[in-house]
Image 1: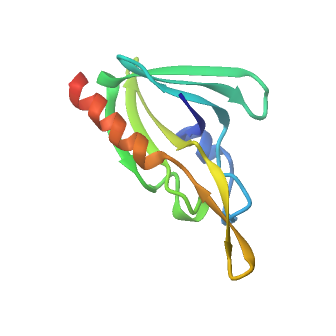
Image 2: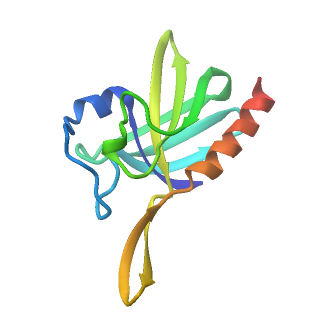
Length: 139
């Protein structure tokens, strides 16, 4: 179980980010803050809606995952974050959805030449490989 920031594609579109650029001191765009777990048959996301202060949870069965990528697309663009999101496209009840994840997002401070630099980091690549293994077993 890891900490995660996440949002669905339709929620990212509604955020009206426009041409504002991401900077190092800001979190990537997200609607929910919570925990992610690799279950036996499904990926589980549980968290809180950061604006409404409501609980939210979703289980994505591995067999329903259609696409798993690390990087930007036409919804989550490069200008929105310096970190690449982990994208999961899945289908449930005839509806196709995409969720964008930032797993274990944190800001690391590095000292270099007597200056402190804040460098954001995630564990997205580690989770990409773990999910690919789960998908290979599920399919």
